[in-house]
Length: 588
Image 1 (cartoon, helix red, strand yellow):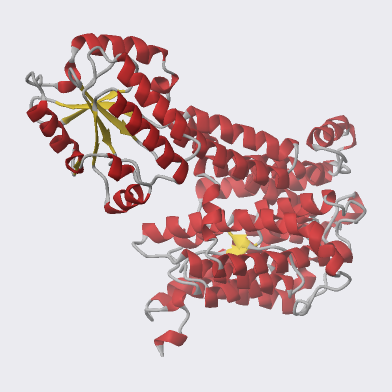
Image 2 (tube, rainbow, N blue to C red):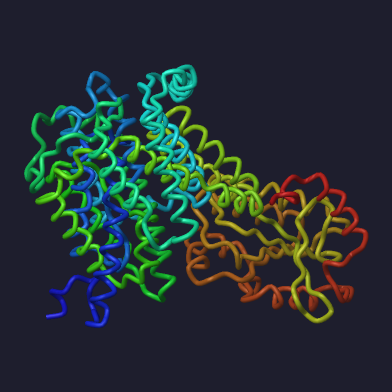
């Protein structure tokens, strides 16, 4: 019978039920105002925000593997969605219109199909092409776009058109038209949310602000004083079925939008699932989660709402409330269903500046200054890329930003593979390896050069690798009689690199020197045998370890090896001078 139990619920204990229900109620208190606020980003009717945490959450609970991941509307995917619909051949559409909503639902269906294909074709690794640093920059850019986008609603002024800079200029030049009652609701909401965060962090300030604002708005009839309210909403079940008013011709322009959402969904959801599973010593099946996310987006598309994603913020809340499993998310879905069936009329007088302020805070939270500082401290080149991604997202567009983020992640990966760490190795008096950054004029010992290369050898770096080794050989203080290539940090070699190794072996042999390999794993050795590299060497010149290769050199050397092969002072001084000129020695 256990095979019929959803993976996220296997091993469920009865003692968890009360905790899960309480956590689900708290989660609903946060999710209801948040998801309603996200509709202002996606530019769809407010009621559709509640739809995102109804059927999609239940479907993910049944199909996914993560015990805690909360699936629903997300600010980043909502921003990609709105930006894509406004730019890719669909600019004539009117936001909030039925056709706009139908296209957002169609995009959710396309995301569901792409996620399913990713699972069938084992393409889940595509999410890994968004590096952690670039993801920080991307979400920071989304956060800036999100919180600045809420300013008109919070100030009671019309939204500007054009790019981000034009919109901000419109806001600045319209400050004389600010609605004081509207601003008062926004400021009060911010004060309540931030106050509860500081004093009572376990109480969701957003739901307190929503309840109080509805009461005040109902008593004071704020709409008569210029404060925009949500207005009447159609309650009941979401509309079930394919989106109306769209056809096959709408799919091609939406594919790029759906693909951008798809990449972010995999990257963000996988990172969130792994993070929280690790905290609790649990194993998460990312491929199974992709199936769950596929089902959740298909459910969203078939129930009249927009793209859904794994939410780090709501998952964090669930974890803080000691939620154990997807029963908490199911509880949240039940609460939302009750609201849809019986209480949508209560939300009629909800002031829009309150929702704007809620999303404003969410946008601020996405701006990860602390994360950027950590990236800066660890590797400045990655921080520059993260900042560039952030600026590109809000200045050019979120969808274009996700493309740039993937491209920059790939470029940074190739850059590190193209110029990886390179060392000249030796052994100290105790027989332990010594490492010095490789630079012309260095040697491991008179007549010996042990070279370590810390990356795959492939077409992009193969010639550079060969040139580096040849330069080390020709610039060594003493004629090199043995070149030992430490392969312990070379996982793989492609055909181009195999050809480069062929040429390098020939170069070494033509200088009447020995070429030896050390530290090969079985797969790498098999690859080099297929490429014919091993056949070029003497059978005895392939060693399990660098230490054994150095011992073989010692036995063949006419002069005894110094105690520290890497300690030749003349070479060290020459190496230091050359290393000062080498840019890679100053990488952070």
